[in-house]
Image 1: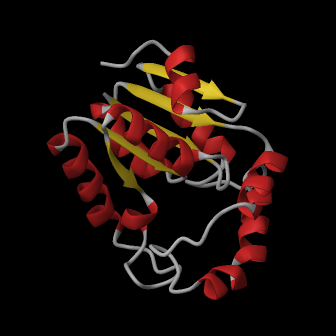
Image 2: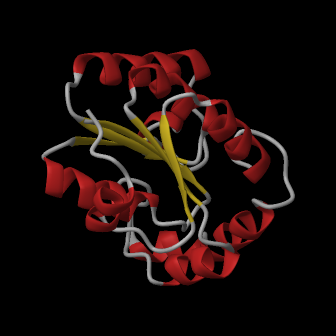
Length: 171
């Protein structure tokens, strides 16, 4: 089983990926850990290095779930993916999810540091529907539309169980 998940910040990608990994014994890859330099806030990693890391992970790991808002990095995973999930629950759900987000130690040194970046995060979430670029609704929709494999756009709050019920069991 190889699953790629894309969507806005706060759409539930990380939660669903963790749930799927636990339920189906998959290795998870959070693309935030690939897109950005470690221990630095908002310092992008070299694009070719990040793409190579995703391809390497997907080609060497038999059972995986990859999640993120980066269309280019998800696109690098798609040749290896059996299923693409596009999470699109709407801006209000994304904002509510951000409000309930726990501290993310792989991104921030402390909860206080994370909280200092909270308002910009909410602006980023709201901007998803009007911006262009790799982390926009337009680019996610284009990626979804262009994928010929098994794919599902989910507008509710998915769980590993609901994904299993809504989607044929991926290979």
